[in-house]
Structure formats: structure tokens, C-alpha cells
Image (cartoon, rainbow, N blue to C red; front, side, top):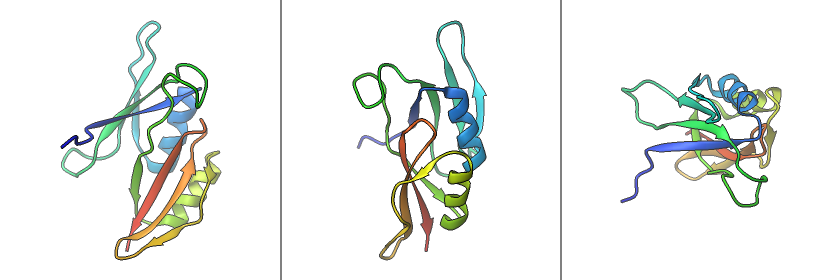
Length: 124
């Protein structure tokens, strides 16, 4: 099995991306940059809860062409409508309507301030 243990979000402006994710999901984000190496460590929740943590780094190359671009991750949230409003208020975009997933809950795709796709899911 290739279990995902860490994620990285590529950003044209990592500070702006950090602000977006803090505002929408309440993630703890710490600037770990040193010299030319820009990196923000992301903690998505307490260690005693399931989930993964990751990082935000400056995008290498042009968006959508080579280099570091994006990895689509899904965030579990309590209320999809509330979170959709937070995404728009923080400068993100909603790319699909909230859709039901039979027996699971509701789901939709979005884009952050850097143009990266991500998704959110509400339990039933």
C-alpha cells in the first residue's frame, strides 16, 4: 500500500496560501524557511486524530506546466455550506456545486488563491 503520509501545496505566493488555509480550515502553519528554501509546515489537526499534515512551498515553474504544481487533497469538514462561504471569503473559488455521495455525505471541488484544486467533504 502507498499510504499518503504528507502533502505539499505548491503556491505562487506561499504566505497568501498560508493565510487562505488558516482562514478556511483553521490549520496551524509555521514558516520553516531558511535562506532560499521556502517552506511552511502545515498541521491540520491534533496528533490523536486521524489525518495527515503537510507543507506549503513556492511553486517551481509555471502553474500547470512542469515542476511542482498541485496534489488534489480532500479535507473533511463539519458543514459544507459554511466552508464554501469561507472559501469564497478567503479569495478561493468553488469549481463544482456541493454534490451528494450516496451513503457518504456531500463533496465539492474548489480552488485556493494559488489556483490549486482541492476538495471538501461533509459526512452524512
